[in-house]
Image (cartoon, rainbow, N blue to C red; front, side):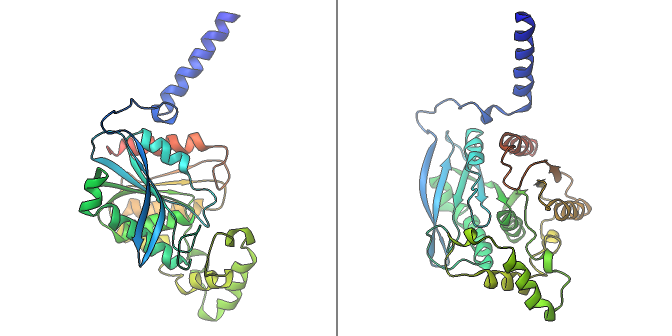
Length: 295
């Protein structure tokens, strides 16, 4: 019985090892000359410094580099994913938007979109790329929820972005896409009724009504399908949970496929919006997909 138990245990471990990248559970060899590091970062955006961290991969590089955009308001920042990506050889930039988590300025969805673009501009600037060993030909954007919209928006705006991963991404304007101008008050009232008061605590200079009105006013342009043509053939990985984000992501995938993005893919996972009980699965799917893109 003992030998059978050991054999089964070994088989399970081998199977899991084959499924999960080594970076999920194993530290890479230490590079004495260029060790992994965490750099405290302030990224300039429209007169404000976006505060956060750059997870710097070990080795001389230059390294493929991920910009990680958190959701609304950012209680889940997916920093376990940042660590796994760094172990896999990626730099990872993760900062807060204007008006959130102590960063100066007012929070708005417009500012989130602008801040997402500013991060791409900053990380690909010659001085910063040289300083932090960034391969500017291998920039990947990863965003969760609202951050997923920031990621697809910044990909559409910046041809230098190579690929993007959208995790339960919010197609911000889609909920109001078919509404007429006279529907605004009703739509904003519905949005306000669904905002958790705790979501406003880390945010400055905004209200639920202001955020709902902003979405309504930009309902056509802040839609996945509107952004899709600017993506072209660049690969997009869409990962969704049991949270209602699947249909919009699947619709985006179909448009991307029609436009020639043959490497784009949709992976549904049965879990909650923050992927609370599928963190390893989330990291594994992302790293395997990135590996297939030859990053």
